[in-house]
Length: 264
Image 1 (cartoon, rainbow, N blue to C red):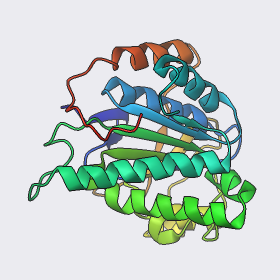
Image 2: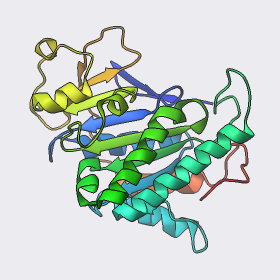
Image 3: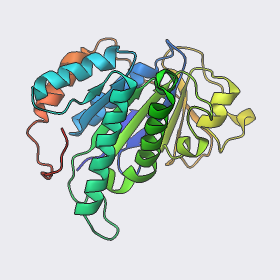
Image 4: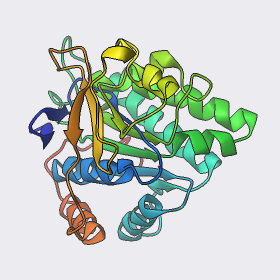
């Protein structure tokens, strides 16, 4: 089972052994395009998509198209409100726990058991938390912590968390540090940089052009502890909805292990 792909010559993402990717950047910085590229690449590996987009923007529309293919009687794979987000995260946590319960093996993971990976796109995390009431915000935060801390071995759930700005009130620094890949699009304030790259001396972080698609990326696989400049792939000539729908339809028939507790 292939589990990795390249973003550029210096940045590879491997679903295996990682909880996910965190992308932070202002509007227009290119973070949504990068998240879209990751979504398509992971779906090309056979992953099932789950979308949380309380802006009800491009990712929400993709999720609605996926739902239309699943048809009536299936659990929705898209969330547009904080309570719906909490529902999707609850389903993913249950799936993760079921996988741990039904697939036991010392030193083995979801790849060894041929379990279908899932990609969770969580767009504008900070805006979702700001929109949520206290109880829903706590529920979302608690479920996110469980996914990030536990999914890498048996969960097979790769989270792409996008946000305009992060601070410790929105996402705990220990949770942020668990993402195997962390990306800052364009030039960000020091508070956001400190949360994304907690292990780095901010004064030593390389310069990055303040242009859409340009950013800094850190991966657990880097030998260098500093984030490295990169340029995200250009998708302007790609018909994203068509590619996404074609991948979703193609993945309906797959060779992954059938799971009686599969929630979608």
